[in-house]
Image (tube, rainbow, N blue to C red):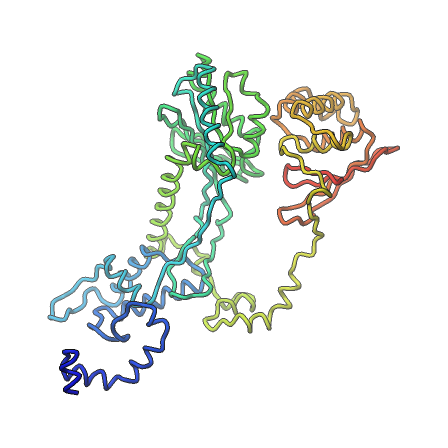
Length: 508
């Protein structure tokens, strides 16, 4: 003992304490969780906690929210801690007998998370740039300068537009949970699938044009603040007609465009309806020239993505989190559905997933048969070349497939596709079956690309070419949703098409 004191310069009382706790020290050395951290004392060592009761209840609250799949943030923890403290007592006596207020500071929060082994679990994502991204960006910038010089476009008439979708309930990407948790559940509310889209437009001289808000699956227009345009679509989000309506109300209604007819460079991303608008060139009659930003490059080439959209998204998320924070302590803001949620009312397999003693192996043994019964039994259709012809353009994919039937070798340019589409449109005008539903305005929209009536086009091609044409619609998982066939008398050929949203492919 004396030799140890002289060697490492520690007091006898400390050595006696180590000897009394020798079993705990040996056990700690065998614990990998302790060996991999910078812990310098055993659990329970150091100064006693001043608000131990608050921290215990707070920890149980966090674990309960994790178990229910509800999000936990630092801001929520601090507010809940203060709420628990006031429930226990308004003030608490300090070590020296003075009254001490509990502030739930950021420093206390970090120490609490360290003591309880809590960390933030976050969902990660990545965007991959296409091959040759640097050359593509340079070509795009040169094209912008070329169009500006060619048409003498002023900075105020260089306009970038982009849509920002927002959900009424923001998707949780992170939550506070115990370090080392193998599975973290985050439950969504009943409005997680409902959303709206706000469209911003910014000019080259830094002016933000009138915002445009679109609500999906609504019939009546909600009221918004003055200066904001509002529209609704009772079926889905953006469509060709809504995009054209937006362009007329925001871009073409400006004094520079409506009266002075000044040329405009309209920069938009490669969204489906945007591509159709660019290919149709229908805005050039208004002296508006459309330029597309290629996919996966908007974060580099689109001014709104770089300077405006992230700020709006952060502001919206902060406002949503502030509302949830108030709801944690204000019962008037809490929904009845959240109050009535009871784990015991769930189906046994779901209830077992939320059990604190959840065992994946045992769960699989009991309920895997039920999961097998719920597997998707729909037919799967794999679309790969060379068994299928895959058109290069989504806009003219149907026309390319139809032309491919007539000539399996030749590559078809956009000009040939437009010519064949015009031929089909002229043929539709003379079909007795379509005379009551096909009008001249529809023909102009089809040719210009403003409207896509796939059914009419396929029907006309079937009659004109004397083909039986079958169409199989599949979803993103290559599962067959439905089939339809156009049959003619004396068919010369059987044509099989598959459709994924608005993209068509041809069975070779």
